[in-house]
Image 1 (tube, rainbow, N blue to C red):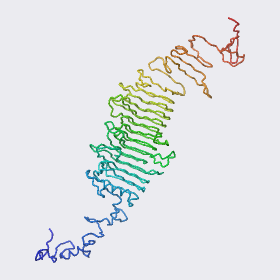
Image 2 (cartoon, rainbow, N blue to C red; image 1 turned 30 degrees about the vertical axis):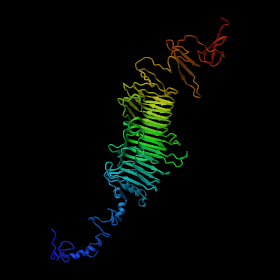
Image 3 (cartoon, rainbow, N blue to C red; image 1 turned 45 degrees about the vertical axis):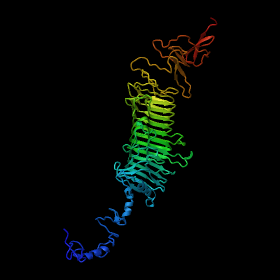
Image 4 (spheres, helix red, strand yellow; image 1 turned 90 degrees about the horizontal axis):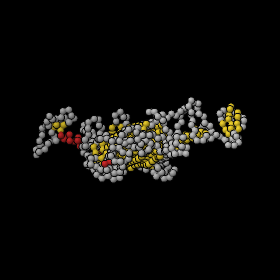
Amino acid sequence: MAEPITIPWIAPGGGVSSASVVSAPRTQWNKQTLGTIWSALQKDVPGGIPGLNADGQLQNPSMRGGSASGTDTSAAIATAVNGTISRALAAHFADTLNLADFGVVCDGVTDNAQTMAAAFSKVASDSSYVNGVRIIVPRGRCYSSVKQSIVITDGRSVSVSGVGTRVSNLTFGAGGLSISTTGEGAITVRDMGLIFTGVINTQTDVALSLTRTHETSVSNVVVLSNLNIFSASGAAGWHKGIYAEGLAPIGNNVKIRLPDYYVGAPTDTVDVDLYGYPGTDAKNTRQRPVIDTKWTNSILQGGAIGFQVKGHVEGLWFSNGEILGNGTGVDWDGSSTTEPTNLAGNLLFNNFHMNTANYGFKLNTVASVNIQSGLFMVFGWTDDTTRSYTGVQASGSNEYVISGNTFSGNSNSQNASAINLSNTWFATITGNNMQNAGGTLFAGTKNSLVTVTSNIAGFNPSRPTSYYSGCGGYTLCSNNIDNGYTQSSVQANGDVQYGAFNGNVVLNPKNKVWLTRLNGGNVAVEAGDSTQDTFAVNVHTSKTGNAYDSRWVYSGGSGSVGNGMAQLLASSVTLPPVTTPVAKISGSLVVPFGTPGATDPCTPGQIQMDATYLYSCVASGTWHRINNGTSW
């Protein structure tokens, strides 16, 4: 209980007498009159409150602990823990801004369009932050009804950061967050969510747009980390998750969720859209390329396309992530229509899961592609034979490695194929597995220098798998095709065809080539239609040229040689000694016609004739002759 105020307490006519004495032990006011105390409160006097002006406000306070309320202490000097230099509190707070400092209220209801725009304008243009600044997105949902932009014109670095992907959120009724730069500063967006709440989806509704508006020889550092891009319940959904032009984001733990492609969503929605401006001419004048954009531990879900890539893009890396519920996983057009200088390339996908409806990869004129250790699955199909799926479709490209992938259909998969290459060269297709799908493991058209090895097409009783290679320069070996055939019209005998249709198969063993049949019987070697055409086996013994020194031709039916007959066309034929006849000649035996000299080179047993004599070689370089007669 406070000490009592001493007499006189009540002055005549009411009020408290200034002569009243206050008893306040343990304070400097003990035994002081009210008049004395009041005088001290009105001015800075010895024994009063240092720094207190006539209005009761602190002036140049020196604070050690305690608290101050309702006063402006921004000019107060403070030293950070373990720091050596004292700075004004305002300078300390300026190192990191907060949207709340500009009046943004993150209750999910208040429209912060103006206050948020003011904050981002300060971040982008105020000279106080020319060396870079970070602005914090507070806890909650900070709503703006319109697009918000950070337009950087002097190359400063900017970081927009929350305190957690499910804690701090920017929500938009339309538009999204756009960051553009004309300099070489870094851009960081992290630890937050970007949420769409609008009920109408337009092409301008892009969650995060990143643009470099100038050409430079130095790449900007763009880091996207711990981002969650999605739509509120009942909202139409973002049109694009991330758009990057002339910038190569490094994304880690980025999750983008657009409406699933197969449930009637727009056909032009994109999770990540990458565009490298190729320049104004063939010399890449004023180009703004995308160089080595890398994504790890990320999930792209929904939308017509996962990654859409156009223009001068060199390097798209994706690992330990998923692309789900899209029409196409990666759609990269590097053709002259989007990249006149033909510099598109360097695609590396590794350890990933891709569950898409139409294509896994759809690549046009993209060089240096490496797709490894992926799980491809057909997404969202009904039992509809008019639809088709291809895991990897590529054309007009080179330097491909597709290995260690699994292509898996489902009980409703129709026409699901794994790999389709056309006009492609230098490709290795190895160690891939296709399961439970009715389609083709590998198909090719007008390719060259393609190696297809150690692949497996799994058995599906209701949808037989075919294996087809169509054209040019293949080397194929050790592929296991269960219930497969080389053509699109599946045959019951399970034949496997290597090469065909304008192409060659080259077998180049160190020793022998064995043709065997597991259950006994003869092995048939045929070409084309075995009932009509012939099959030629050429023995190439010339080391200096391309001449074939011996050849045999087999006709399976109506060919000119005759059914079951062999025609030997060679300068010499050697038949090994056996106890039973080794050759049966039906028809004419034609002996070479000529006149050798007595010592001409010859092989013992060789015969020849002319109009007068029959000649026989009895020893090397020694001929004998007998008269051939002069008439019938």
